[in-house]
Amino acid sequence: MTATLTTALVWLGVMVIGGIGSVSRFLVDRAVARRMARPFPYGTLTVNITGAALLGFLGALALPKDVALLAGTAFVGAYTTFSTWMLETQRLGEERQLLPAFANIAVSVVLGLAAALLGQWIAGLV
Image (cartoon, rainbow, N blue to C red):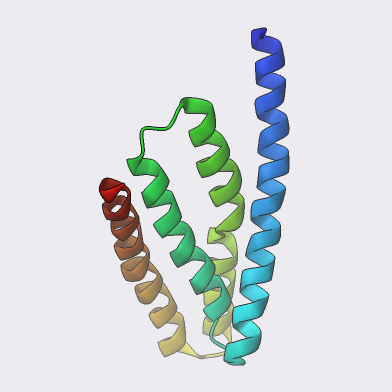
């Protein structure tokens, strides 16, 4: 296969798989938010923690470059959402819900790091 065709297929894969990742994020976020029915952004927290675990898992595998790009950058990159996390935290602050705002930051960072380590550990077992 020529390099140009391979590059075009990778770009197409990024678009399709990235779309699947963003739709997955939407579905998981909405499902969790509906179940929790609270002003705290549990849906975004769930998406980002599961995404950190998945990326930790993928990062610990010896994947070919294009596969890592498609799985890590396209799917997980579209699935997780830093910008929504920050916006929801900022909105909690605007609403004077400072404890939930700071908790969102702390819990997200601590659980995100733990999830990434857990994903790496699980990959090591495979």
